[in-house]
Image (tube, rainbow, N blue to C red; front, side, top):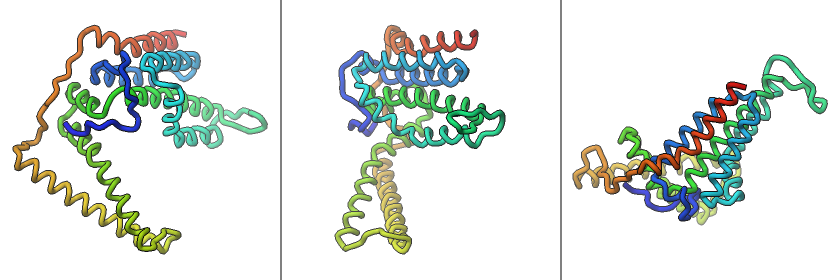
Length: 253
């Protein structure tokens, strides 16, 4: 299994969360997100408790708040979408600071922001405490289709190579005096994209032939067998179980 290098979201540490087997953290994160999505949007207090639970996990994982907040910026496009909803949604209107806003749009915006932010935060915490190679091993341990795990592995492994190839092509263009300043330069950029695709395709063919020559028959060998004890499963699922209790109270109330 390739891609053993650390990624930008990973924060090296030896906390109790870091040492959990990856498949337990994957399953717990997925269960937590399902619980959050299932919570009625009217139970606003429940989302505050979910955020508090994630803050406890971040504290146990020794992940600083600044590290987490900086990486939450990835959801900015969703925030922009949510901000527009009260203005474009139909239905009952209400005046807020002199603006006529849709009630359904306000609830929809809150729903997207609250659940989306919590889901992204949980994913960032998972990535911050689990290396890429461990994540792939965890997916494999959870019996995901081997082909999907292999595709993810190669995507991670060769994504950096393709990015580096793009950087070298950009430097080559700039060293020859090229600067993309308008529509008339799009042709050059399109040719560069085509050349990059051809190079990537040819690299893929060479890698596949090299793998077949070494005995590849459609599945990658499992080098590390990752197991988890009952105590580790219990520790990992403390988060989604606590969230489930909050969700049930939210539905009852």
